[in-house]
Image 1 (tube, protein in one colour):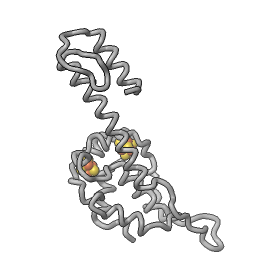
Image 2 (tube, rainbow, N blue to C red):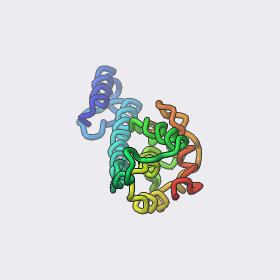
Image 3 (cartoon, rainbow, N blue to C red):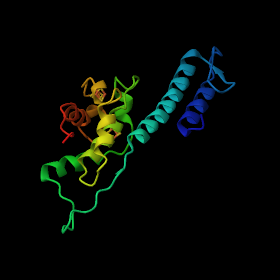
Length: 176
Ligand code: SF4
Ligand code: SF4
């Protein structure tokens, strides 16, 4: 309700006036059915963002158990191909566009961005907590909820092929 975008919408609707047919949720403001649907719909998306953050928290988007640097090495090792994929995946800015677009987001699914956040860490040679990650990734909330509609890849402003990463995960690519 206190989100700036919602406040702007409410102000605009009040300026438009119109018939007092429906209430804007959480306010005493009455407006036309169409305007109320617009603002109430926008507010439900704000709630969806809360859920999206919960899902991100659930996958722990950080290195859970950092491995010690390999003996005698100054750096961790990763293949050039994996590094290329890793760099692509880490460009995610958590805008949640993919989660909004995902046809499976309303179901018991972690969603594309949360799955991506976990895949990034599975590609990271510093992460040791692989079993914990794989358990969630292949749980009933995980990658098999994805229907490969490609909507996530289509809407991503960073042009990350999210659906491709999820397809790789479905094929067991990050289990090793
Ligand atoms: S490809 Fe999968 S994760 Fe991406 S939008 Fe479609 S169902 Fe959602
Ligand atoms: S749309 Fe792209 S940048 Fe935005 S959260 Fe999804 S993967 Fe990340």
